[in-house]
Image (cartoon, rainbow, N blue to C red; front, side, top):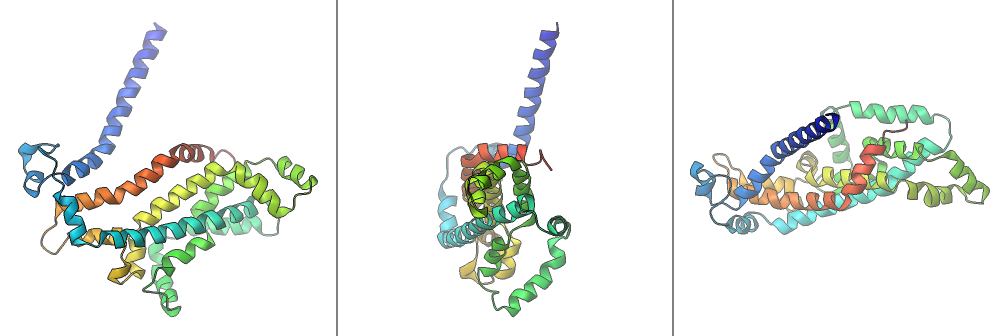
Length: 277
């Protein structure tokens, strides 16, 4: 009887999970199917979810409406530099805050954590004025340079990984003759690969889809990113929904590919980053 109850409970659990997955994936499915419909089909109730025939004209229209490859190149350049800065700087900061003993370490970490409580809109204008005085507005640099100083969320995630490294390993490496940099590169980094993969995916997803940053600083059409380019399909009186859905589908693909490649490390990183504080 208990075996039967467990079976029924497991079946109900999987049914609920599948239903929830469908609810969350349904908008994505609508976006993709709409991108293959004609404009008339998209607003015809009789058509249903799936198009009668696959129409690729919307994807051609994307390249005719915006310089897609240029916007994609701009987006990948900003994203790649942000990921590079995150991967280089964040592990060093996290290691310093978790494994190197120095005066004021905990205070600095508290201040870094506290900055996450400040909404971006509260510091947006002062930051903009700073970049104006530096003469960097109208370039990619305001979107790239901050990554090389570390983002609080990524520092916190990786610090949790570093705290999980036994101090005995680092002490053994020190006894074997490893200096501080060797202990960092040869011991700490290999043990935090899931954490580095996690912040890499986070950095890629956030930067690739960022809208407000490019809107503020990339104020020339030749500097636009894909997130800004999507607004080219909207005008004052109408929206070209089918072409917009095609552009959004292509916009989503790089993020989906990166997530699928690193999903194992991502899930492992999320599940273990908070185990030790």
